[in-house]
Image 1 (cartoon, rainbow, N blue to C red):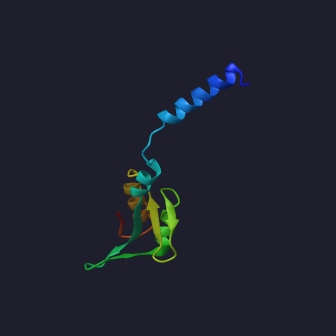
Image 2: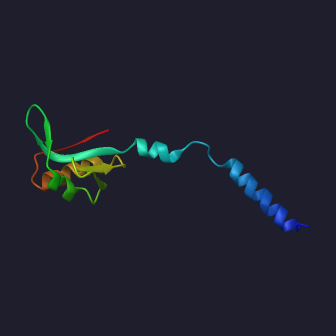
Image 3: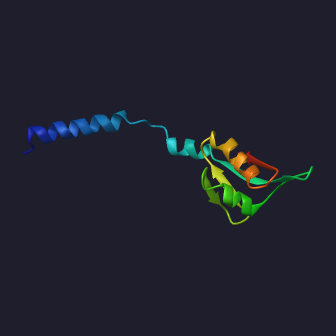
Length: 98
């Protein structure tokens, strides 16, 4: 009915499926996304500049939202690089929030 090779292959597939991690790593990764902005500090609030945020973002994250324009960064090492890019574009500061 079934060949020996087919049965062995199915048993191997079952072992792989049973050995797969049960936690949802995609959800964990989405929890690490930070919204980052380029702009200035007025003393009472941080004010973002959508054009600078959009221009600084492509190298380090993904542009999200029409208003406010934000750069969504998932890898922590990209945060200081994004802030440095904001300053290179003429903005006094850049910041990220979870």
